Amino acid sequence: MSALRTSRPARCAQYAALLAYLVFLAFPFLWLVSTAFKPAPELASLHPTWIPENPTLANFRQAFDEQPLLRAAGNSLVAAVAAAVIAVAVATPLAYVTARHRGRLASAATGWVVISQAFPFVLVIIPLFLILKNLHLVNSVFGLVLVYVVWSLPFALWMLMGYVRAVPAELEEAAAVDGAGRLRTLVSVTAPLLVPGIVATALFAFVTAWNEFFFALVLLKTPEKQTLPVVLTHFLGAEGVADLGPLAAAAFLATLPSLVVFGFLQRRITGGMLAGAVKS
Image (cartoon, rainbow, N blue to C red; front, top):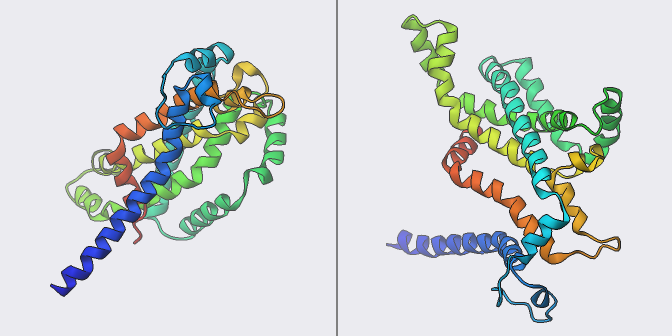
């Protein structure tokens, strides 16, 4: 009974902390949604309200009239999908080899992951810009995709390495005993078990590329090729004054793809994250 009594307050404290954290995370999004549907007089009010008193879609119409949001969203979608597919395609076989064959390769891959995450964007943007300029890939969506792939590849490799290690090697050995070749074992036994990790890794690579702003701002100069996060900055005036209503409406639309993808693939994401954290 004493253990039960001591555990209940602790459990309540955990739930309270979790609830406070969820409120902290949800507050900016809820305020964004509220702002997106408020008319101009309510946005200028000295006493803002959570729920719009006279909700309107005028901010959305104005946002689409002022900026090419659909074209920018298309550019972001192409860059994000291509970066996620290429990063996962490169990281999956490399993660399998690294996880199954321990040695200098695994140590080098782990060191690469740690070192790559320590470099800030500002430190690498100048040499990166010069390299892409020599390759004639500045102001190119393909060049931006290559940058996203290189930037997300270390995390994709680290996550998939943990997922491969979570797959028992005994399953592959049993398939080999039954007469299955190496390729058939990988396709029929290992690959299906790696699907949740591959989906979770691709999703994180997609969301990272979809929300990325700094590289797109520096590398894409032509308005027709700019991505959605860059176009959102066009709602700011020359003196930094934001057109708050249309900006909130456009930002709300920009967050929807990530929310929808997370909603549909929540279970696979959780499984991939837990497996990626397994150490052996």
